Length: 249
Length: 241
Image (tube, rainbow over all chains, first blue to last red; front, top):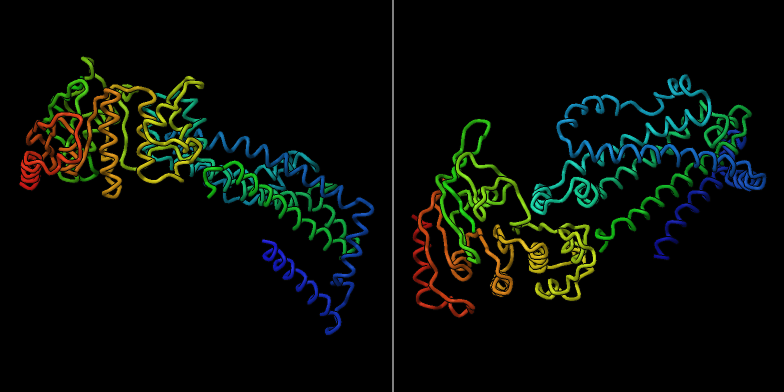
């Protein structure tokens, strides 16, 4: 475990080392692509002023709100449609037409509807994470084996208990697959939304530094985006382990 | 207690109508153990699904305790060949599934099914035989009058199967249930049941109803008894012809 971790860290350090040594061998313009040492200094600087942390928290807050709304809407909707197959067949074409539209294609309409700011960002994040959560949950709910449906009929369980004790739990591993894809989409969506339609957040931070040609800060922002996305994914995987004890060995 | 009255059923395929059951008519007495045996694909499971109420027959009906019934219900629980336990529930949560009372003691069911110490285990961590016993305990928890078993031991190895057959007989005598068992295993049918109903190839009709003359409790020793072998050969002939 420790050994595996050490190997992973070694890979990252090697890449950084290669990057740094490239400047000694090739005549690279350090203003165009700054070396790791410059970026590290800039990173420490951004942390000291608190600037990047405040943008990070803004982006995370938006993701948590947009993603939560998406999960709260998508999961029950997909479970219900999985149960009522006839309604599902009716709305399926609509979903399948909306689903391929990338979240960034909604940005113009979001800005017109909600203006620049949080509401547009929530809307874009919601759209980005809704479909993966919805389609995975629906797939789970519609693959409930007949044997469980029959058992529920014989035991005469109420419709509420059927949803709560059978359909939900059977679909839960699929729900988590959706949530894990969804959180990645949510994080990509917030950055995209902030690049064009916000006055704060990590997307705005890198965009603003492009305007003032602070390449080191752009890269600092990008690294922060990567780290935060990784942490979000890992947290969900951890939550999944706790929520699905019957899947553990 | 159970009357299967002149049931016929067809399956509607896209291309053709496939007759599955034809004029099936029999009666099962209270506390009786009846096995239905037939060639594979003859419609045994369809018949069980009709008795359970999952399928409505094209003709005929099922009468339980004098009442014609067409919906599944807690008076008759099915135990399947495949795992029918809820994977996300522990053994004790599965057994409690049908019970409304959350404090009711289920220890006697756990010991009846020889699952002591496995209350908190998930089905994925149980052996095939233990899963069947847990499934049986879940059914017994709601005290149904009739147990419908669809080749429950079909996927188990010989030793486990024989052990479970002995346990099933023990549980059956201890709980006074009526059991209808679907099987393709001739020895299992004779060893367990009071009556054997032999079905023909599709569309299934009743070829013969055989009364098994052994008293209960039975031991595995009856399998080498002369009468046992006579019945076994007769069923074998019926299934082959």
